Amino acid sequence: MMEIQVFNNSFLCFEKGEKSWALIVDPCNEWGNIKVFLQAHQIELKYILLSQASFKNALRVATIQHETGAHFLSFKSDLLPLRKLPRLADEVNVCGIKTPRIDRFLDDLEQIDIFGKTLKIKDFGGVRHYQIEKFVMPPIHE
Picture 1 (cartoon, helix red, strand yellow):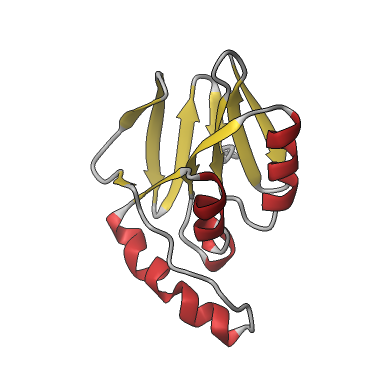
Picture 2 (cartoon, rainbow, N blue to C red):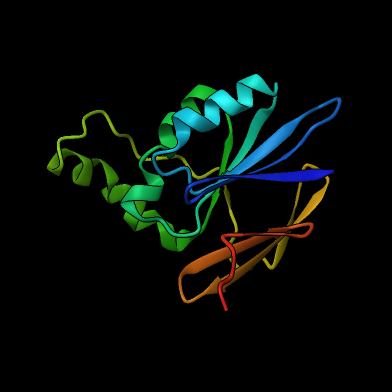
């Protein structure tokens, strides 16, 4: 059964079991706390998603990829903002930031199989909402 853990504006959707796994949406500055949670519960991070390829959201993706081997799923429209990331980081004195590698493009997909679960994708004017089982990340505020 899927569960969700919220870390400020970051969402960790995970499944415990024989092969525990997780996906993260918008790691922002919460990667340290999320990593502790994953280690404490012996959960392997498999996927990284962004609701928006902003500096704040994308900052940790390359680091997380390097540390975990997680796959980064994104959109072709995110390529330009992601390529600008190292230069923007240098401007704010955050050294060593690399452009994240997109492992699979989600363009033109309404859903995708993620570790045997269906991940539904909706784009609301450049901000993406992901739904897996009953969980919508980020929550839609009406």
